[in-house]
Length: 445
Image (cartoon, rainbow, N blue to C red; front, side):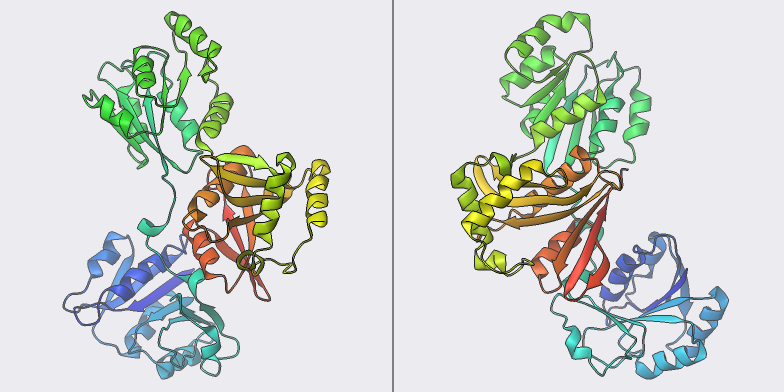
């Protein structure tokens, strides 16, 4: 697709239009995108070039200049993000090019002649555009369409990992370990090694485009790196003595015969030790170390089952459920009991440091199609745990179940939930009545 974005920036206009247009442009990774702007005092046109997009400089706001660009680049979609471009301008473009699609930004409830109207403010109300846009216009209003710069999108990074496979890494498994770790979206890695490592250049090349890995060569701050880490992957050697002294949770991987005594000691004391590198075993060990406690509903005590029902029937939770009626205890217990025979769904009570914080569930699990529907809610009146619960959903769905797609139905008016889903990269793939169908793809599959 050929897309033309018409916007300006200056000391008077500000920079917000161009910045949000750059975010919008990233939603079309395969498109040929051209920005058309004026060279005004205080503009940030350099940002467009830095982002790798073609820039056409306009001499004025005259429609004929844009008209020539539409013909020059065979434009299929034009994005108008400009307060001085109005309904008449848009209408003239549509009349000249009936097949041209026009997306107009708006946050002041003005009249527009466009195919798509985007008001990405969280306060946007699509009802206020009645009579202001053509009947065929698609309205994209509110929190689920908010354009956020990459720095605000949570990809992770909630846990920090210390890796030390020996200064020389004779076994050459650092990269093998990192290949396993890249499946976990919520990790930062401090990897220590030395110039004695014969595979150092290969390691440097591997990590250079991965911002989640920090390579430390000949570091004299090992204790500090351990202190800021949540757990470690090390060899059962002198380094493990130091990790053990620091009381840092660890996974030990045997790489030499002279480590056998340490290996047997830690196995006997029920620590996590791999007697050789195995990617599947390491994945499982990391998952078990990282996760908060997930308790399957069928394993809950009667008291916890009643607690979960109280949460589910609480007005703040029930208002966002498809079934808004209160569920009787008898029906609740009966449904949990039925889960013992159902392989396509699983419900978890999530605990952090032994404190119940919320519920996550997977339904319609289809391992053939590699997808599942998900649900999530926090303990009533408990704030600030949405990110943790979402991380658990993604880890369990993409790492444990190895799914390719997670799907959720969200009420359009549930702004908090939509912002959470947007933060983690979910995209709206469908809309049914008052519900948005949102999907997250596993980019590592």
